[in-house]
Length: 238
Ligand SMILES: Cc1cc2nc3c(=O)[nH]c(=O)nc-3n(C[C@H](O)[C@H](O)[C@H](O)COP(=O)(O)O)c2cc1C
Image (cartoon, rainbow, N blue to C red; front, side, top):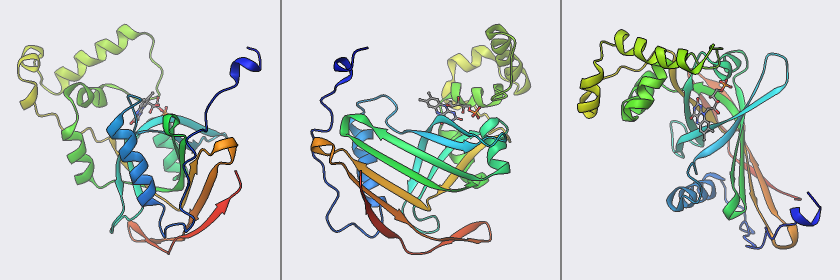
């Protein structure tokens, strides 16, 4: 690939972060998220790269979907994703419950970086979200021992049949009556809430004079949650 072929016409929208940075980054973050979600220029506009720390000390990254953003107490400035608690990322989070999450909305020349500790969502919150998932997704959560090796795709498909037996489900009934099938949430599956301690907003600027600002705050562990100090913000060179 020649240098010329990788030249691009990006960074021509010239979006600016406000001169006076807002007290919290979550208003702008939510507006950016909402626009990406509404216009859906990519199918998974809620995707974020989630990085955890592997037990070998190296960072480990993968895509997950952001399912909720909270501004207000009791979890002001937090985002939620759902996963298998016993897969690699779940085990890594047991050992080191801190993450970095990164949204990139290429069409809008925007990036959001969030760092902070995670806490599992409450059973009630995980149950409610699980119940809202499509049937295939609910079955899949039972079927997959996420991140564990398996000898073949056929073996994976056999596991689906095993799960149907285990849950007492009948394939024909499933096909005909998808809406009313009750499938409990597996105990190994649920949500994590990232409590933002640091948020960086990046907006592509004309001539690569990008706008960047970072907000930080102190979090203090308080029972099962946190108390939050005020945000402080700094504009950064691109
Ligand atoms: C677009 C996209 C969305 C995904 N969303 C999720 C998700 O919300 N939760 C999840 O556990 N895995 C999701 N995955 C799969 C993860 O990237 C990853 O393969 C899986 O979670 C296993 O990661 P681990 O072995 O590090 O635990 C998604 C993958 C893609 C490409």
